[in-house]
Image (cartoon, rainbow, N blue to C red; front, side, top):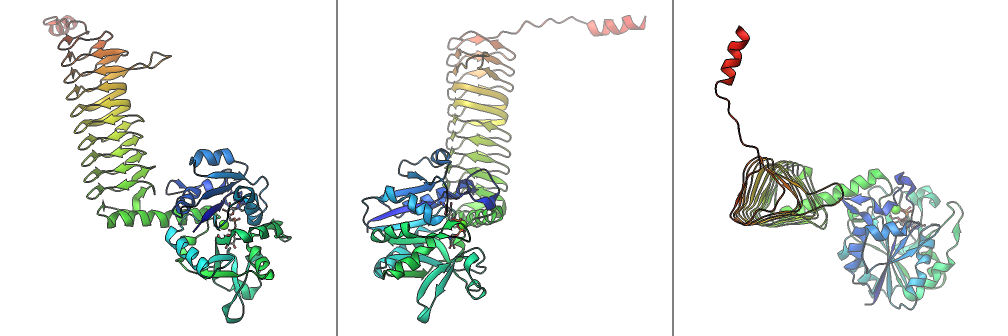
Amino acid sequence: MRTACVILAAGQGKRMRSTLPKVLHRVCGMPMLQCVVDAAKKLDPERLIVVAGRHVDLFRREIPDPGIQFVLQKDPRGTGDALKSALTALKGFSGEVVVLNGDTPLICPATIKKFLSMHQKEKAHVSVLSFAADDPTGYGRIMRGDKRKFVAIVEEKDADNRLRAVREVNSGIYAMHSSALSLVGRIALNRRKGEYYLTDIVSLAMKRGLSAHAFLIGREDEFMGVNTREELLRASEVLRQAIVRGLIGRGVDIIDPASVFIHPHASVGKGTVIYPNVFIEGDTRIGRGATIFPHVRICGSVIGDRAVVRDSTVIESSRIMPGASVGPFSHIRPGSEIGAGAKIGNFVELKKAVIGKGTKASHLSYLGDTTIGSGVNVGAGTITCNYDGTEKHRTVIGDGVFIGSDTQLVAPVRIGKGAYIGAGSTITKDVPPGSLAVSRTEQRTVRNWAIKRKSRKKQ
Ligand code: UD1
Ligand code: CA
């Protein structure tokens, strides 16, 4: 089946009371529109068109997908007008056009596929996917006549009391044969709201003797339209629970499912344990048998098998190799890589730091713009002085180096393989392999100084 997909996403979303376009608001950390795009892509459409409003550049930034053609609906005047804005992008396309609303983030591709096959089987020109709502408030009602024959979609504002009581409602998902698309241009302005309703296409089609159907399928949850922040929270919670339940089913041990937030694009391997109050954001990938302790936020990172992330740690755009341990209270900033079995301890900050296998930085350090080899011991309080006020410089530390506590490494500087740095040193020059460098002043000890001072005071 040849399909094209149009996502309507240009509405301002006044009911959100926000400056951000409605469909860019996030559920489980992901823009609603991305959820709908993900579902649309599962249909493998020949064209994927998103109708965006004035903020089209913001849309491109938030959903950077070369497979999407963004079209501009300059002055959003309703869903009918939105689809009209996509007609140029649909030129020359022949097949089924699937229309989705950008504010229904929970839709399942399987339901849309089922809907499409029903639409095709009936050889319908226009079809709408409907569902039974517990509370139909806000949705367009499905009006049926004799023998339950589909007649029209009536928006709440235009419905009488009898129709308002109808619980079968429009999900905002439509299928139309490309030959019926010209009807979009004929939709008349709804005077009450000053908008062009896409839903009017149903009666337009029927008047012209084309076939229109409403297929009542799917579960209510997945069609939830988000118009207010309250509904956004509800949708986010439904998605959050589905993600957490899905992971538990696949063998992830989530100790408090109510307090864990996991991005829809993230993955977690079997046997991994996740403690309470954990946020896993972006397309983070966590391997098998890892442990994520409480109050951790991991964003766009890779965590290897059996790695341990201890309490109150933040990891951003970094890679933690298998068996490594990070935290408690570590900050791993973008561009870092922690080698297998390495240990990054409390109050250690990393930035663009590559840490070799089995290397340890256990306490109170800043390691930035650094490459550290394997088996290195970084003493407490070690600081790479990477910034000279204008530029950033790198520190390179070879395998097996021992860095004494309270050391400053003034970059650019290189410490050769197996070298030792005495505690309390400020290292400004390269240290050759196998050497010892100490830069502190020598200790002076004055014997009996304190005792003498005391007796002097007594006199
Ligand atoms: C719409 C339907 C309603 C259905 C409900 C399902 C119409 C007239 N009504 O109502 O029957 O039950 O969705 O959730 O279609 N949009 C544009 N340009 C515009 C206006 C809207 O692109 O000018 C986009 C919005 O960004 C949104 C979608 O179209 O993603 C739906 O618009 P919205 O205003 O939320 O429609 P509803 O009132 O929810
Ligand atoms: Ca809506």
